[in-house]
Image 1 (cartoon, rainbow, N blue to C red):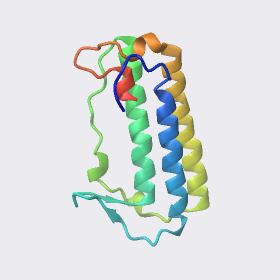
Image 2 (image 1 turned 60 degrees about the vertical axis):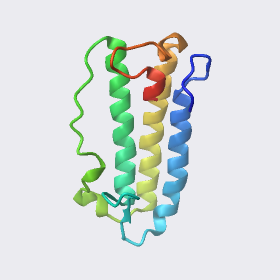
Image 3 (image 1 turned 90 degrees about the vertical axis):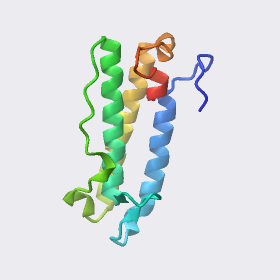
Length: 139
C-alpha cells in the first residue's frame, strides 16, 4: 500500500480486512493432515495453531506500539521468539472450536486496533515519530 497522508480511510480497516482474509484461509485448515507447511525460505515451519498465534502476536505487538507512541513513551523491546519457534501446543489438531476461538480472538484484536486508530484521529496517522513508524505504517 502506498503511504500517503491523502488517504483518509482508517488504516485499521485494512487490519480488519486482513484478519478476515486470514480467518477465511483458517477455515480450510479443519482438514489439516498434521504435516507442517515449510516457509519459502525453508527456515520456518507452520501449523494452523502457530499461524493463528503469530497473527495474534502481531496484532498485540502493533497495538502495544501504537499505544506507547500515542502515550509518548518508549515502545517495549521486541522479545518475541517469533516464527522461528514452534511451540508444543502448535502441533495440536485444529478443530471447529479452535476456529471459533480464533475468530473471536482475532476479530476483537483487529477491531480494537481499528477503533484505537479511529479515536486517535486522522491527523495522527501520518505524523513523524522519530525513528518509529507512523501509525499508518504500523497498521
